[in-house]
Length: 467
Image 1 (tube, helix red, strand yellow):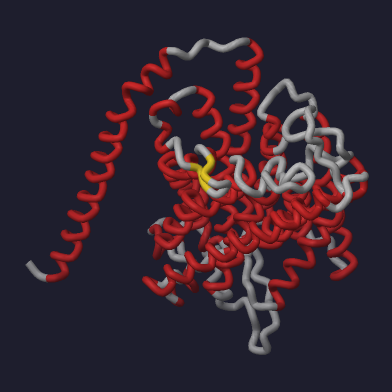
Image 2: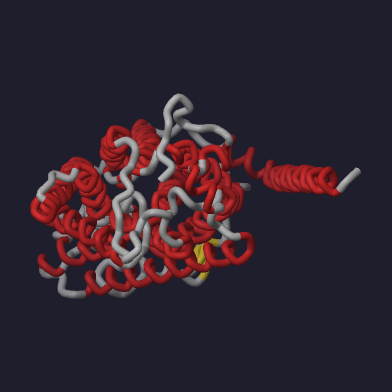
């Protein structure tokens, strides 16, 4: 038997051994928790009508958020070239696959387990024992769909040149560590939520916890990878690399816009919190304002009505309003969305000028506007609504007599999420790059990733560009 036959056989045996070890471990852990789990389940009731309504509300909202994965897949594929469409579909698919499992194994416990010093959750591993109850499973599912969203945001920023195996690793790191720990600090009773300033650092539905995390990890990945071939001319000026389907991109944005009505109103966690009507209207107004701002700004700058930029303007407004959506008035939602549209336009130009190649504008849409959404709470929160309820402490911003306390708490959260997400994301990509190289071979990038990585073209009956 020659070396060419031995190495693949060793790899197959090693893979089988790893899978057997995982199955054995899960079986043993399940056996340890089985008794308590059955007791907890058997002692649960059917629940009241009010409880059932709240469960249905959260689950249906969660289903909408999960469907946003389809929206991200369409946006990223449409904004990129046809020769990479299969690769982008695979990456958006695997985000939810990896996220579902990794967040179940460790992420949920780190995020929502018993708090240890404000830094980390320490209980609820694999939902065993006392965590085998309907409420915990509901909470797991809700936080899972947000976790997968944070991971999938990164795929757009690193599109068209990242090895698939590197994508698997970074996705696991986001779902196991980066998202859960910052999420614990804000949503799990951690130290940011306990700041003695205003109501503590707050983020109603995830401008920071989801979008800034994903966008800033994406920035780190784009910086480590470097720009795509053909993105800059000999003098260093950025060149447009058009996506292959504005139709798919527009469909994706409409799906995301629709899904956001689960993302934001669903974050009340209750069908009985009638603030959901305010949240839905604010969400819609900010999206519209973001789109209008980018449409007019692109027309002023280029003389063209730029549809691609306008689509990103919709997403920018949605990202920015996600943190303050329950705490602001409608006029403020419009202002937040307008500013978000300007931010995404200027952000795309800024990163292009610095040779940071982000094919879909994910860093500007999610990273920059995630940070802006956090800050906007400290400015526009009107003091009429508390932390997911009508009870105090009410969230009150600078313009409504809250002083600078809430704004300062939000600024601290901005600095923390920026340092944490970008820093750990950069470390993850850099270590992978040193270990095995995260960028595909030049000839593979030029030909497109669909065939070298997956063996399946998205459009086998069409000739695709080699640029």
